[in-house]
Structures are given as C-alpha cells and as structure tokens.
Length: 268
Ligand SMILES: N[C@@H](CCC[C@H](N)C(=O)O)C(=O)O
Image 1 (cartoon, rainbow, N blue to C red):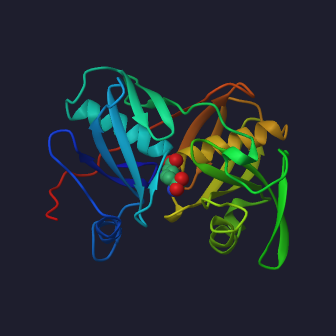
Image 2 (image 1 turned 90 degrees about the horizontal axis):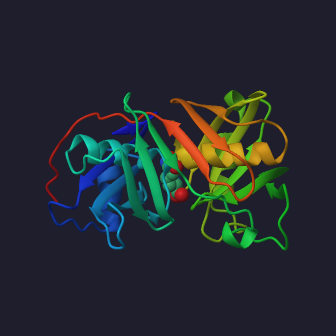
C-alpha cells in the first residue's frame, strides 16, 4: 500500500501468527533483494479495548510509535479486507489510541493526537521549551522547531524545498546527539497563507515521498511561528494532505488518501 508514495507492506497478524526480527524486516525492506518499503505495518488484535492494534517498523528494522500515512493505509486495509465494517475505527498504537474515519471517497481522516512541545517529550536535549532551537550542522548553524507527534520531529524553515539539502542536512540531524531517540527532519517552505511545501528525511528510512506525521509537525511549527492558518494544505513530493490544528492543547487532524498496490505471500 502507499499513502502519497510513502510505501508500506501491511500484514494481517490477526488471522495468522507473525513474528519478525529486525534483520528480517531490513531484508524485506531492501528494494533490490527484498520487496521494498519505507515502513512495515502489523495489524494485530486490540489489547486494551480498541478495535485493533497496529505496530510500525521502519525500513531499518526499528520499531516506532507513530505513522500518519501508515494510519490511513491501515484504515483502508482493515475496511477493504473485511476485518471491520466500521467507518470510524479506534486503533491502539505505542503513541496512544488513534481514531480514524474513512469517508465515502475512501479518504481517511486521522485524529493524530495533541502535539507535545516540551523538549523532554520530543525528546530533545534543551533546557527549556522554545519556538525555535539552533544547532551547528555540517558547516552552518540552522534553526529548527521541535515537537512530538507521538514520534520526534524537527522542522526547518527553508526558502525553497526543491533545493533544500534534505539528504545531507537530514542525515546529519536525524542522528544528532541533540535527539536521543533520533528524529524525523522536515524541510518546510511556506507557499501561501494556508499552504506549505514539505520534504522529510525520515528516521530509519531516509527521504520518503511523503510523511504524514511530518506534515502534522510542519503545520504545528508554522502555526506557532505565525506563518500559516489552518486548515493547511501540505504539498509533499507524492501529493497533498490537509492538516487542521486549532492550537495548543488541540489534536491535529490529518486527511488524505490511501492506496492498495498489490497482495502477496511472503515465505520467511
Ligand atoms: N512515514 C511516517 C512516519 C514513519 C515513522 C518515522 N520514520 C519515525 O521513525 O518516527 C508518517 O507518515 O508519519
């Protein structure tokens, strides 16, 4: 499946027992010798009263707590595979419970929860919460916003996403010592009063064609900086998401498509 080109292998772990090691996930994620994906999603029975639980792994085999595009694909998967007939689905993740709504056109809206701005919750090594922080990386000092959408994000404001040094600066910041759990690094260009363009260097996956939680983080950062109003259209390399955030203490709502590509069997 994919959400705007952010691609997934989604496995039904309700009707079969599935256990994968980090090494197996890395091997499956290999685009030449495996299947290839940015993230792998395991759809499991709920443990705490929601409709389902889902577990997310990055292409490097690391388990993570949040995935916006994955959440939309998960919703379409359980709907189209007949695992539920609900249109509003509650799912447990390590980042807490998410509520996903599938509309008539198969667009999915996800309540992504309340962003965490305290540096300790990102986590980011910083003495106090600020609108922007700064870091020396490669041969320059860059300013960034930092927040958690259930996973850690840094967002840099850039003049032009097309020429932003996503690979070099992204890789250097993703594993910078300021981020004890590493971070997803967004490069955000304000393109209008309610629009921005975004590229994201994802933790554990490198630059992807779209990052849903990154889009939420970029809108939260831009709203806090007074640069956009919401709902905001976020243009990612793979397409557009609509993000709505009514301000501190409110949850971020993300709406966008999810797409099936093919079904298959994996022999492990
Ligand atoms: N592609 C995702 C985010 C996946 C997890 C991320 N790489 C992390 O390590 O936190 C999205 O759409 O949000």
